[in-house]
Length: 405
Image (tube, rainbow, N blue to C red; front, side):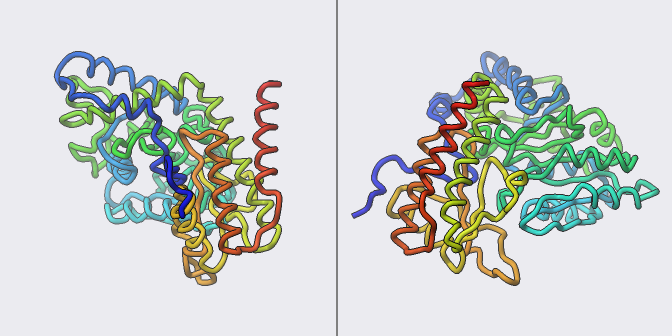
């Protein structure tokens, strides 16, 4: 017997759960790509994307995934031989740095490991030592989905400013946009990359690069820019096809329109608060389970944890066992351990991840936690009591506090 019959729940850190409204918007015949409603609808996307990113600057849309958005940002900002500083807190900042190196950019990495956030003071020290201002940009991720760390973007800008350095601040918000608080203009971010499949609740296939005037001035001298990745015609096209350097990704755009309508109807501040509350509920459950000593959250400090995903260290091969059990018997797919290998812990099988981003609510999160609790019992993984009660209490208090305010 299996208890997995019924609607499955993909509780991974992207692609996230797709709302029915998004899927329904995409379930339509192909539109005319030369005139009519598509042209007007795309024009409406740009200001709404900017509202989600809290910016008045420019945005370019690409038919790509997050890695393509990485490359778009790199090719518009840099030339071969340019130097960048990459503070890394997990898998994905290193991945972006690797891509930059393959394009001929010289990368200096500050590796903060897999269990802590970036220390802005160390970034400041490196920039103060760069008296010739040879470092063109500080480039990192706001949230690393492998480790579930969340970095202080505002603190990084403050570190750059204290050093009196002209470096651009370039941020990957692929996992965090429309989940964790992000204010591009207020926080002094010069360029930001994002993708459709996480907080934006749209199937994988769209990438975004937001950029301000300082970043666009760097584009003037960028030797890596190519016709396809060039952000200028996409952000300010003379004719419609330049938005996408060819045929538009029509059905993704209809889905994105529906997703943005949902986000803006809720309000971006309410979206951030919902994700923060749901994340605290998840943390409360794992705090309770971890009291038996067999399990812990990868990021100990709650202030450094993502509101999009939580990475759990379960020991041995328990991460893989728990993930396999919930998928087979409860209909809940958890995220695999990713990028967590170390000399002391050589197997990602020891960890798993639970995504809580995008189109998620209290009963979905409680259901996923209930499935994890079932697996812990069935697999006899040591765990403390009271996890679901703790999560329910945090979520209930979150609702009460919201109503008071």
